[in-house]
Each structure stands twice: as C-alpha cells, then as structure tokens.
Amino acid sequence: MKKARQPLVKVFAANVRAARQARGWSHDELAEKARLRDCRIDTLEAGGGSGVNLSNMARLAKALGVDLADLCRRYRA
Image (cartoon, rainbow, N blue to C red; front, side, top):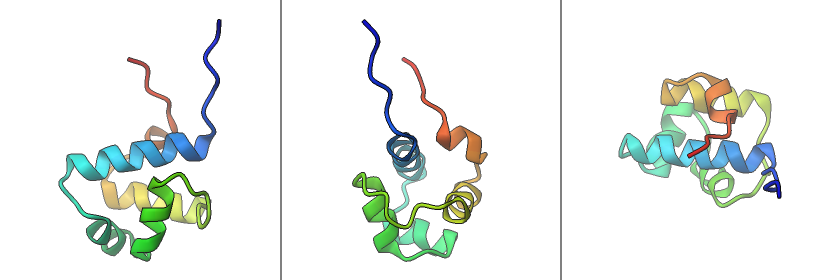
C-alpha cells in the first residue's frame, strides 16, 4: 500500500523547520535574515499556507543557505 503524499507546502515547512533548528535559530532570527515577518515563519511551520509564495520560498532558502529545490524535496528514511 502506498503512503499518501504530503502537499508541497507541508514538505517545505518541515524542511524549513529542520534547517532552522539545525542552525539553532529562532523564528525571529530566520525572519530577520529572510526579511520576512516572524509570524509568517511561525504560520508556515505550523502548516499554514498563507504567505507562501515563490518569492518568500526563495528568500527562506537563501537565508538558510540551501537550494530551494532541497527545501521542496521529500526525504525518505
């Protein structure tokens, strides 16, 4: 039986959270580096899709120092 696929926003959010936590950054720190409001980071990581657009996704990837494509990938254990 196949696993249900997660929507891209949820995969992206989980990867942003993991990358942020790996760097020891708070929501505020990531928001400052990405030039976004911290409430957007919090909402995104909570699974909300509001404010998620290509421009904001690219800003987050740049701030985290990773490729946007990597933040959109599903990782398999």
